[in-house]
Figure 1 (cartoon, rainbow, N blue to C red):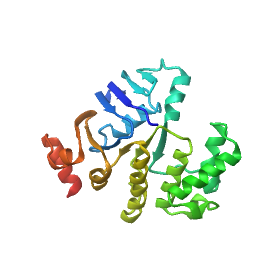
Figure 2 (tube, rainbow, N blue to C red):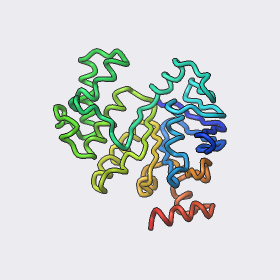
Figure 3 (cartoon, one colour):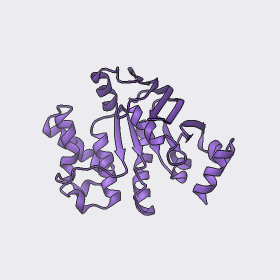
Figure 4 (tube, one colour):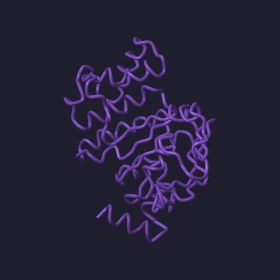
Length: 248
């Protein structure tokens, strides 16, 4: 079961630069949210704050029963609980090159969750079947295409039984055909009610699969709403300019 997520007036600065500026966002369980906007607008920083990879300077974040406050006052145990609530997937895959596909997926459940090796193995096989990678159990990352690596990364994130997935530009390094392979997996996961927050420039995917599109610009949430509303009837000039540039 997914948890509700709430950002309340979150501000994040790097030196004198404000990356998130008093941003608030509520995400109910099981929603797919596409975060769009220009580079440097705060999208990746937002999801890194969500799972505790980045601290923030003001506001608070609530993930189910767990709360993160501004600064470094949070107990390590609280941060760890929030991190384990999410599976994080990056654009560069971050698979262990010296481990097989199967071992990449079983490593964390065994070491972090204390899962028995047999149970971790069975879960990994199920998840590889789910993402269309069951024939690559013994392969190593260097033997896989970019799309295959990303599907393994999704399976690895799911092996930790997260409440949600945070995806940071996970198709940006892939060609169009491989992008669709990966995005189709995320669409299928929607059936399970998993909360997915996706930083993306794939406007077509946002339109097709997202429940909500959130536009970040200069650290602020400029627009949000159903895809048809935000993408077809932008309320602000800045949103219209961004869509024109992205869509060509």
